[in-house]
Image (cartoon, rainbow, N blue to C red; front, top):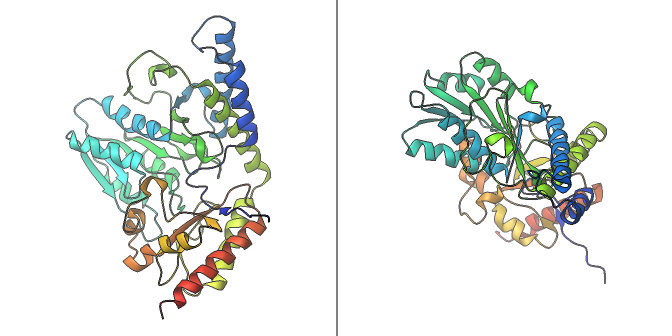
Length: 384
C-alpha cells in the first residue's frame, strides 16, 4: 500500500533545505573546515567561500557585500539591529517606534529597552494588518533613535509600506530597520529601493539551513556589538563563522534570485488556486490580511463556526499547516496579530495560515483543499 504524505503548507514557519544547499553544506563540512581567520591555505579557502556567499546574499537584497553581517539567526539579527543601535545612541535619545504586529524577536528587545528606561511607541495597524506611514511619522519625536517595521507579516503576509516610511523619515536622523525574514526569497527585496538602514535576513525561510541569518547595515549606520569577543564580522558579531551554513545561505540566495527572475507568479498562482478551491467549498470563508499587498505565497483564512486548531488537528493526516507563527505554538487564544487587526474572537479563533513553497504543485493544492473542506464540513455538521 502506498501511503501519501500530508501536504506541507507551512513554508512561513520553515522551508525544506534545497538539495543544492544540502550538497554544498555537506561538502563544506568535509572539505572546508579551516578557520576563516587563519592565514594558511585551508583558512584562506574558507575565507574565500564566506566572501563568495556574502556577495551572493548581498546581491539578493541589492546590497554591498561589505555591509552584510552574518548572524546565527534572524532573531539575533533583529536583536543586534535594535539593541546595537540603542547602545550606539548615547543617553540623550531614548525613544523607539515599532508596529503592533512585529515578530517576538523585535517586540521582545523593544520591551527590554522599555524596561531599561526607554520610551516605546507601538503603532497600530488597520484591519488588513498594514501600518500607516503617517502614523509612524507622527509617532517620531526628537529623541527617537529607531523605527522598526517588518517588511512582510509572518502570519497574514501583509506587506508594509517601508519605502514610503523611509521617504518620510529621510533627513530627520532616525534609523529605519525592517525585519525582512518572511519577504526575502519570496518577493524582490532591494535595500536602496526600500531606503532602510538595517534589514534582517533569515536563511531557513528560503531553503537554507536553520542557524544562519544576516543583518544588512548601511554604511555609516551607528550600531554597537551586543556580543563580546573577537572582531569577526566587522566587529559586530564575534565568534568563528559557521562556514558550512554560510556557504549554504549563499547557494540558497542564488537559487532564490533565479526563481524570482524565472518563475515569477508560481507562488501566487498556487496560493490563489488554494483560496479559490476553499472559497467554493466553504461558504463564509474570510480572508485575513491585505487582498493585494501581501506575500505571494501566504493565505490566512478564517473558517466559520470552528476553531482553526481543531480543524488542522482533524486534518493532520492530509495537511501540515498552522494557525499562526511557529514561535507562538502551544499558546492558547487567538493570534496577537489578528487581535491587532481588530478581528473578533470567533474569526480570530477560526484562522488558519496556509503558506505554499516553490515545490508545492497544483495537485498538492487540490488534495489539501479537498481535505480541509471535507473536515470542515464534517465538523461543522456535527454542531447541529
